[in-house]
Amino acid sequence: MTQGPAPAAAFRGFMALVLDMVRVDPDRRPTAEMLRWHRDLAGAVGVAPGRPATNQELLDGALRLKRAIDRTERALTAV
Image (tube, rainbow, N blue to C red; front, side):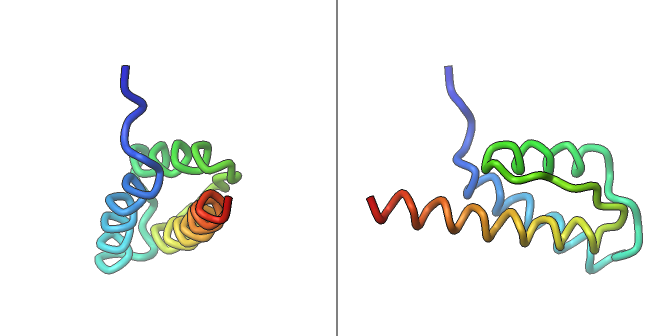
């Protein structure tokens, strides 16, 4: 049984979609699927997902996830 892609790989796809959504309509509410994806990624990296009400807030949350993923990867390579 597989676990799916690594959080960093899944994040790249997520971030591409979030950036496109913010470009089109930053004040629109994110879709339920994007919110679920955000929660899943946050859980995978051990970060509280928050409750983004707009695409812009989802982007802010995605940037927090990126920082957490970077910290995790640095910690793993430092060992």
